[in-house]
Image (cartoon, rainbow, N blue to C red):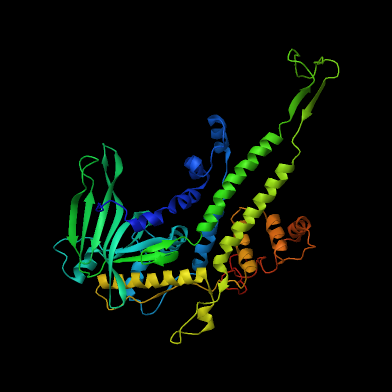
Length: 476
């Protein structure tokens, strides 16, 4: 059956199978609860009300979301820089890259997080429609029109066509899902679905038919001055042209397992905290009244006592959760570990610095290349010969998994997900700190010691220049 304009292509459907778990985890506890049985199965013979209660008190340990935040923040821990070959007007446009107040640095950080979380997203370099009175670059400047960036998220990509020519694969058609804001009554507005179809030199927008079962119809169309589709795909782990997967997908599944195990642990803790009063040897006619001023009459040789949980299962559950959390830290940290490059041919570079990189460094370089393409498309819209290049910070690789996980532990502690004491114990477990250090004693000593060296402010030193402050004449 032929695809309709609003349908996902088979390639997109294959990628989309992995998106719900990432979307739910990134949505936090509320989204995981809303997903219900998809990620927290109902036990056999569990009453619906009991399951509803268990689901309603479940809480998420946000390892997946926090790891994406830490990893996507690495390349943007220092300011993105534009090379000298970027035209002045494009540099100015990059201060408000999307015409929504976000500069290129902030815009790119969001794109990086999307790529790590879902494996595929993109940037559309768009240009506003202009009237017939705008004919020259001077007219465009006067009217304030210029190219701007549109963040195309993973679920917006519906399908594409491509062809390979001159050693490069190029898009010949791209379908993007979007929404249009329309009035809803006198005061409200609502979002209606649309599909934008892009082809070299032209575009079209389709809208739903009058009835749900009707075919979508053409709403508007137009032409462009470009002979290419101004879209740049960006990947997490690239599988092929326009195809990618999250490099943290395994971490996502571990996080779901932790969600389920944490629910089990919370349930058994609740059961263990409530002792059960058992009557042994009493017949069915025995009456029981519990209270401080009451007595119980039992038949001869009968017994009554509270039965409590031994706690063995609780301990086992705690150990299981700790192991899962360690696995999640390790899985996320693997992106930072520097790995040897793949086998190279004689014509390829043998530079060790280029070969030995972490996965995150390689992903960052791909995003950096994508930004160069974005700048070039901006230049094409502006009829500039070249757009220049952008540079991202990439010196964040770790020499070992232990070093990499130590960085992630620091990020988890700074994000408020684990305590300082837990962080110190994790460093001890990895051999970063001596095993004979007592974390509790160490934290108490730190609190008593006061600010670290170099962090105390000298009232006589200007904090901006670092030079002694000049006397204030007014004070004299």
